[in-house]
Length: 329
Length: 283
Image (cartoon, rainbow over all chains, first blue to last red; front, side, top):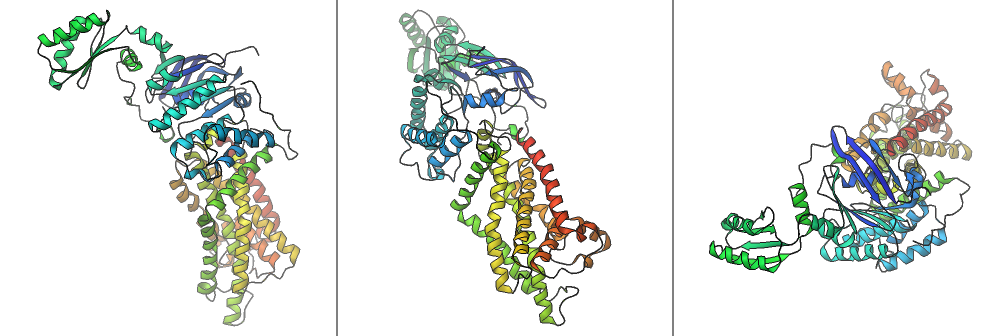
């Protein structure tokens, strides 16, 4: 194979009428790597995954997956990938086992193999007890696990996970993470989209931050955190009205602009714990009542804030879209 | 991953039919798991038979048959049954419209489209299953007909031919219904839109009243309506009264016209829907 990269996309543009969903996306995923595509709603994450999984054709630019062109060789791409979307794409009325059998048959796999592989997946995804019950009796977490199992029936070498934990409760989310981590340990290449910074941090070695259909930053979680400066000091004020004053005080000790979120003020600092002492004194002198004060490593939230000027969870006002685009991001 | 999943050899029927049957099996399992929907798809045509047989029975005269009132009512029942058959199989299209729209909402369409399966298999499966369900519907309907006095008097082979034509027509309208379903924003709209065109299609035909009783301009439309030729064919094949046919080619060659019309409609709508399917994502 001439192209050994799992995913290689260059200058991908996707327009839906007037709306530009992707505005020149570049993306490379090496084999065996886990890459997190991180961005707020409407940033273009889902559109990118749909182009890479052959569901949408790009308006401009090109993309290769497993060495095959997504527009010219869609069937070769489809044989190499597994796709798990934002909602569980399994049949409600079929049982878990029947779903797996259907997808295995549609991958044109040997019936005997499908049977064995289905059992294997049901066991490892903790679904063997519910295997012969219709899916509509499943919980949300079980559906997502079955959905993921369905995309693994043919042992794809590349897996696209589009917001795999959106809408799951915290316990189910941890369960999904464990499953994804074990896949990665087996050597599967994963491209994962998420709007949860925590999730990208937890699962991905390499993070691509996108906003308005473009890549705005790229690197490991650590590198991205370093990019916006080292540690951060975070102060929670008792009286919301004093947040502004606290920001003024922190400006004198910080290396960058303080950010205010409700009663919490944070600012990048260097110099470790001595800064903390200085800050406490200054706050005391200014008569600001503090309920909490800490020094921490920056989170990806901070990264996002400093890169885009808005928090990651903020739903961006998206231009009016027609029905079918409504739920994409 | 180190191991590669083994792929089976190409089945004799080809991948498109294989994949279509896999999807059809799934659609039929759905019908079994939701017995209510199957039950009501059987109840509706049965109610139609009873309403038409006893409410309109004596009121609509069938030219050429029935000397007294009771004979006339009997003649109408025999005239009516093929009409109900035709109407019922035409309404199979509505199930396809809703079924496809539901698949799109659930995101299943995305998964199917990201599989290396045959193009159009989802649609082939949908139309196979929706036409296949009509076998059961026709059986129940035939029993109801026999109870109210309908009789087959054209021989077994002709009767089988009639049932096959009805199933062919069900399969044909399923393609039309699927194409409509692919254009619908949600299943709710689909269930309305899926029915809207079926009422004029089935009532502007000879299903319930003889074409000769319609105004001239309507007669021309009704004569070329494949529902009319389907119903006329089944009336002839079942040995039921047909009424007097206006002088249009389809009315003189109903079986040939029905098969031809089905072939043309399938060719058009299969092309349209497979193309549309290739560009559809979940909603």
